[in-house]
Length: 529
Image 1 (tube, rainbow, N blue to C red):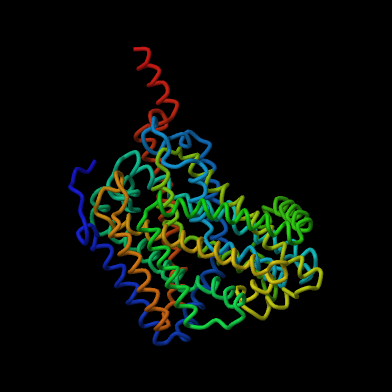
Image 2 (cartoon, rainbow, N blue to C red):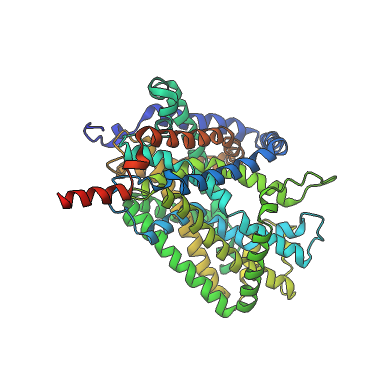
């Protein structure tokens, strides 16, 4: 346990991992920005080749992680408490689940839930006729599948190791290198090997955060422009970006309890109210029926979705195959971020509670969101009010969302609430990211405290500055592809951290002594004495 005095200001930053990460991102982005179109062509070619050659590997990677999650949850390891077994969890179950939902889903669910079904229905699998009722069902079920157990297994499965080192072992550094110390030893972890692992994490997450900030604004601006009956302008984009940055900086400054938790819980209630409002004013009966059909179809075909490679396609593979593998690959780049944040907020929870909450809570909300939002578009398609399939083949997804929302009664109210929810989702994603990076780069003892407010705001400024510079010079799109390719080494680290937590627990015999049952027996013995 560390007894070092608390560092403040610039001294709290571990510059040996933070500065090289920033410089490496700049070194990658600036050359690509000078030749953006050529760079995109080359990088897309490399990434597409990786997906084409190792698509089967990504599918097995996600499935094996899901299996490992179930194993850890329902074996002796699942009952291990992440902290003192006699203490209460840091957050109530509602707050805990809400924070994980906000972190796990983000604003992306507002896009995929609304329009992903159309992209699959236009190019369905298994030789199904494009645009048919069967294609619509496969499309919406896939939109649910892409936010379910395999993806959330990717997000959570490094968390047990990181949570164990900070809440049980009381190690001061909340880092991936620390989680693998039991495998590689002190010399590697404290030397260049540990530094390289931590730089890999920071480059992946800082670049991903910059890309999210730069590319997330269209979800807001497209609906705002439609609401105000005007074109999306640079001024509008900058205003939205400034408001968004101010919100996530303020939330990061306030911390988890006062910022992230309150926003996350409030957004759950707001999203629930929007869903109920849509069901009342819109095609509620159809949405309930279609949601029921979609869930039934997904459950009946879950293994077909999970192991779909479209290997027998002669001319062109279905959209679902390419998108699924891309989705898994892209999700792997965010895996460490989600896990480290989940580890930080899971003090007092068992490993089983942490894993199952992350698997079930976001999945449930994403299925409901997809059922409601997807149902609006499908209903518009079937009754001839809006040809969503034609629009999806011609336009970007974010440009179609306002058209779908405008088919509803009181569409202006719906769009305003939709914009607010999307904005809060974007805010909670980035303030969670800011908080995690601040904790990761802090020299202070993260087993005892949260990162300083100064460090959180500094990280928010760095992410914002990085995004704005890359938006201006044209380096954002290439960086997005580079970020996606960085998932490959992270996949290896994920499996190592799963092995590490099992090894640590076995070595400490924590499944005997660091459980709620052991704490109860200890209390009974003390009372009897």
